[in-house]
Image (cartoon, rainbow over all chains, first blue to last red; front, side, top):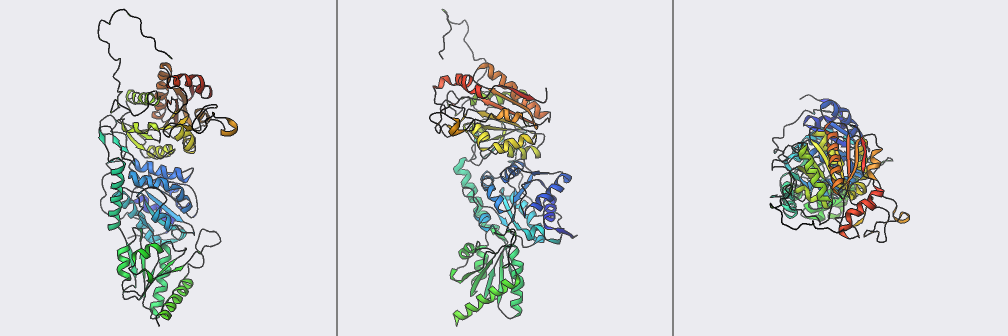
Length: 361
Length: 262
């Protein structure tokens, strides 16, 4: 394995191109901008296309078009721009055109947006939230695989720490196994043969060759996401065996939490950590199992509690769940504020554990 | 308009025949779902004939917007994708960039292209995107029952301009073909109509020229086609073709506006 010191945006670009991404479109908006610039710099040299789109709406529809043409394609923005893309992300879920959306989120965090979405109908978006640049490289490549496997738009949830940090990475293509043939993609060659294709979220089909129609297509899509939920949830635990207290956090917050957990373990506190790697599907079963014997479950998020609902839905006794952290943004709005620090996390956990002990005695 | 029967005092010596089968090439069915008096099926037939006559049906990809015409994507034996309202030029751009040998076209109405999707069509034209965009312009949202669009002409009555479009309240129509003609990236721009035999023949030539422009990789090509809407226009259905000639064409003159191929 050959590692190279790379900035997150460059590492993601390299990882994407190495698994065949040949089209990228975006509209500049921090912290996403470095990824767009990196794609613009590399795509042309590597046989691909990068479009500096005229809006996020245009960008996501360009990616949809490229993906409909059979290419591995990506787009992205921060949450504000991805808000504009919601209609097209839902459309692509319903007409089953796969591409990867890179959310380099701002300080407000967008867990709600990527796990609930703002589009239409019974759709879901597989969302991977890497904890650092190394994992972002792996997740980028895994997401292209999952998108093609399930014919669905998927999301990489990053932020400024993922986009801007330099780490030593190996962006060579990882093999995640075969993906289905794109026997639905358009290249125009079937016109006039009776085998021409029609991609449509209502799956009307061609005259004489009717498709599933909206009722059938939308049931098919809903069933597919049920199957994804049952098989694709990923998570990680840290020092969680025998933990009386379990802290649940996600994304780039988790390395800070893990550091504090290790410190507290050294002090003799029976504490552990749990991290959903897939924000959707949320690892409900794994979290339920991990929390059965815990006395208290703390969430630590740098927002007002966007993951909290999913944790409460997973833990058998929801009264064990206590939300820590909170909204914390720096002067620019782009980055997290003081609550994303070892000191703040340690203080919050120590106080919460003390309160729990006091209530028991 | 009244039809005068041919004067004859004897039956024809041989049984009469249609001059051509109704279903043009590439059309998978002879039936369509559009209203009697609608201009869209004529424009659609021209499109299928042109693709067939240029021999590009096995390279063609249609990117179809939202309107009465949408369902025709199912009736043509051509690769197609139905897309979000207004966004067809963006989807077509992505398709063309990854399938450069394909002949990629958008089919949109005036509500789809000039109203919801003005942003995407102007930027596609400005980029000189090597696609062909076709706007079926009947000046109303036909599919939703006849409301005002960006191309509703002054005085035209619609469900949302019942007394007729008037500038002080509703602003002015957008002559999209003329506007696109001013953009450097647009290589071929024309406006045709389908309200009589002459205009139909002329529009077919415009469409062919637009695809030839794309095949020559000369840049963006655009054809606006004025069509009749028997249900969206608050006039007698049979007078639709005359309304195109007498009213619509005053705002939207029928002509070839620009051709980079000469």
